[in-house]
Length: 407
Image (cartoon, rainbow, N blue to C red):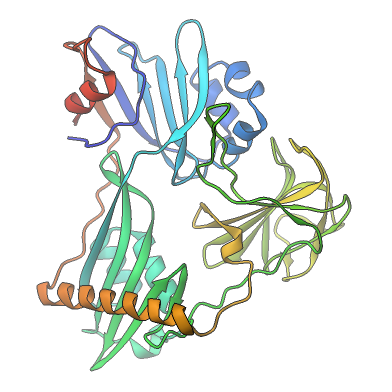
């Protein structure tokens, strides 16, 4: 039984509808509409700038849902664009609508104990079926442990993390809270405190820092995954930070990396995307033009000029829209574009110690219970909604939530 349902408006049909659980394969949104016989004008060309920019946030590999009637005609679509919001398309015989609505999800704190047989990455992947958990474990300890030299068969691994669930399935990247590796009699700890990794003494372990991509100006719009517009009664998310500067201001690579995209994106105008390693991708939008020689596949160094500020795409004035993504999900650039805090002091240190003590108790509890790793189940491809006996006095949401069954 699925505990939470996000399909909000359900047309009355004779017997049953099917919900298909699919994975976004990287095709364009416009191509998706054409393949599903959905109206291009209402659901693409007539959209506002905010909605068009949201479309550009659909990531390859995203799980999305399509509701079809008994004849196989698409009635509704749900496509996540962040951890907080999703595109909701509703089609009927007269009109089709496009909205951004909140994602209903649950967050569970989970943890496990694992004994190394081969390597941490391989064993975590094998026992959990999750590349995400394996990746964040390596990422958290890479500054403190040499995995080739220090890790041996029989060493113990403990991970504690928050995991979101949507439609009863794993959704988005897990957030590591704390982890421990015991090599022989030595225990190595990592704690995620306010978005950065620290050891048990409160010394920062993560050193990946971005520089400001433009000089001068000011921040004209901040990051938000779920910004509500109270007058228009719509969500207007902002998946990055806008730096308001004069046209022609040089744009610098915030971190070294390889250019993976340099071209036009509807809503964002001239865009450059750079893969910076460690799961990071940076995006630079609304550019007037690219610097000569910039092309896909070229490696650029941190601080190197890649383009110039403009007003291309849907832009109300000259500015750089700067986005940062980690493993395909938008994060707040202001968390990484700042001077690193190498060591905690004062109130921050006291707060960290309290957090550390709490996590240590949780780690000890998992070890005592020898909690095995949870196995991530493959995503179901389809479920059926039996709505032949709907009660018109109750909301569709309440009734379908009670009747939806997985196959």
